[in-house]
Image 1 (tube, one colour):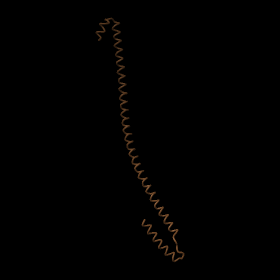
Image 2 (spheres, one colour; image 1 turned 180 degrees about the horizontal axis):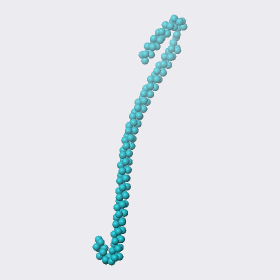
Image 3 (cartoon, helix red, strand yellow; image 1 turned 120 degrees about the vertical axis):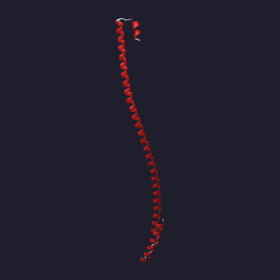
Image 4 (cartoon, helix red, strand yellow; image 1 turned 30 degrees about the vertical axis):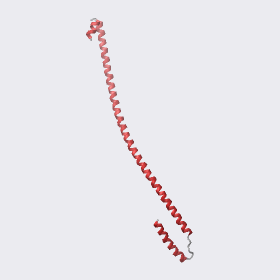
Length: 137
């Protein structure tokens, strides 16, 4: 290429000087481009490292979300079980309340003998019957 340029321009000192400056300029451009490529390579390596870290964090967060979703499902299941237990306890309490009200009503409307010996016998019999019915239920 230099031979072609020399043949075209001739062998004058001005032509040689112009060609020398052109070669020096091209050399500087090449050095600048090499530096730019090196800088961009460094930036690309840093960006790739950042992408790798972000992908690892994303996976970690995804795993945490899966774990938390499982925990939420377990809590929902436990909450449903507790709701069923509450309903069962409410039904049992209502049954006990109904039975208690009925028993209290029986005691309050029962004809109690007025004499002491008769009332003692009545109280013993009533207590035994009441206790037997209480244990039966």
